[in-house]
Amino acid sequence: MNKTNFMLLMVVVLLACIGLIMVYSASSAYAMDRFGSSYYFFHRQLLWLFIGGMGLIFTYNLPYKKWKAASKPLIIVSILLLLMTISPLGHQAGGAKRWIGFGGFLLQPAEIAKLFFVIYIAEFLSRKKVKVKSFWQGLFPPLLVLIVFVGILLLQPDFGTAVLIAVLTFILFFVGGGSLIYLLSLFSLSLPIAYYLVFNVGYRRERVMTILNPYKDPQGAGFQLIQSIIAIGSGRIFGKGIGASKQKLFFLPSSYNDFIFSIIAEESGFIGATIIILLFVVFVILGFRIVLKAREAKDDFAVLLALGIILLISIQAFINIGVSTGILPTKGLCLPFVSYGGSSLAVNLTSVGILLNIGKSH
Image 1 (spheres, rainbow, N blue to C red):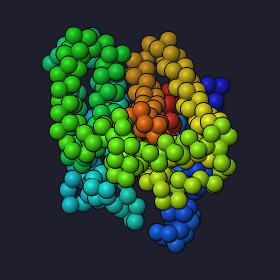
Image 2 (image 1 turned 45 degrees about the vertical axis):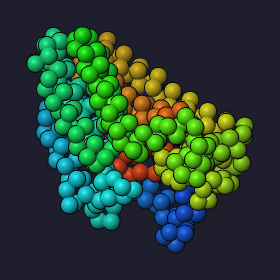
Image 3 (image 1 turned 180 degrees about the horizontal axis):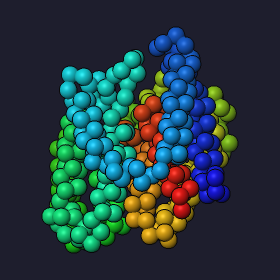
Image 4 (image 1 turned 180 degrees about the vertical axis):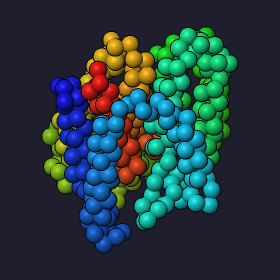
């Protein structure tokens, strides 16, 4: 294993280990109250970490070019999995149907679909090459798939993932040589649609208004953000100590998944929060080294696939931390490798295996 791959793997392992510790710390009180065991979420996270580790090993040893031939079947599988969530097979929680159940576990198909969509876009752009500048031959087919994806995600509803996939598509098309005029035109057309989807839906509009002034409704819409800010602020420089969080004691909802960064900041302070952010920055830098090596080898598929995986993980991390700190409205996206969430952890680790295989091959 080369130096870049080794360092990237160590960053991911460190984030996953920190996540395992913090999932236990943030969830123990709630798990004891709800399930009678403080280790309930810890054990499940450990199991998914093992599954994700196996996925990483598998994809690390599987030549990344094999994904190219499987891109179309994978996109069909993605759509079928997403459709299952809005069927009677879907599991509802918190007003959303984003999961399907099997054997006592919940699977979130959107996590799998994000990776398969990146593979599909990377294969499409690398195959079309100069034709990608054409609207009907280059932009329309993946745009149609994107519309299907976004449509199903909005029905769940999962607006955060829909936005993430849309942003990712635009970036990859720009890097892949898509027509700037078409991309800017689509971006302009998407703005009023996004405005309508946000401000015409009560809870989304409320989330946007809440970040402007969460104290306007401290016991209602602003409660979660206020508790998150309290957690981050009370950690100060060095934190209260691992396990010593007060906000996780039924004050901050979703403290072990969507808002785990707030608990990290409370228990390990500014130092711990900065370390988490720096680890993601290092992940991005090392990932771009792999992208540059693939570019030197003139391997378009590898460039776009590696870039897509890096963006998929880093944008989600940015959004999660932005939500925790009140910069962005609540999106329901977890912190990659760190938050509780089996589907996300397993798929992200599997994605890293693909990235490492690209790094190994160039």
